[in-house]
Image (cartoon, rainbow, N blue to C red; front, side, top):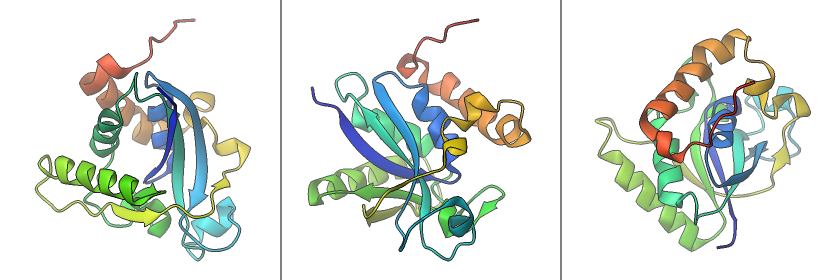
Length: 179
């Protein structure tokens, strides 16, 4: 089966980046900015004036990791009912979003939202947006969690999400090698 790439946003890209890197079938993960206007870089996006979201571009093999499973993990490891925020991260740059490249992908994403809704009492507010220009985030944002595990944000925000991933989705995780 041919690899597929999707672009998803779930708050700070460090979280989703870390989660995606742990999944079987994922061959590439890249933190990016998309969904806004003009060139994007961290300080401009953080200002909230560009309209971009912190997002993650995930390339995976649907034969190893079905798209439906990826979407279930996406919805279960962030709060898709929270508009323009995830925890203490507030602003449109932290919105929950799925960026589609075709009408078929938009319909697929809508089906994923509809399926996930049964797990939430509040309405899911994950935006469906056409994928526009994608800007790669700065090198320091790529694979942040594994490079900076001692940072407070990693310990208090990302680590609990990874623990939830391990508890609920262990059959979809790469085998971790101990040092």
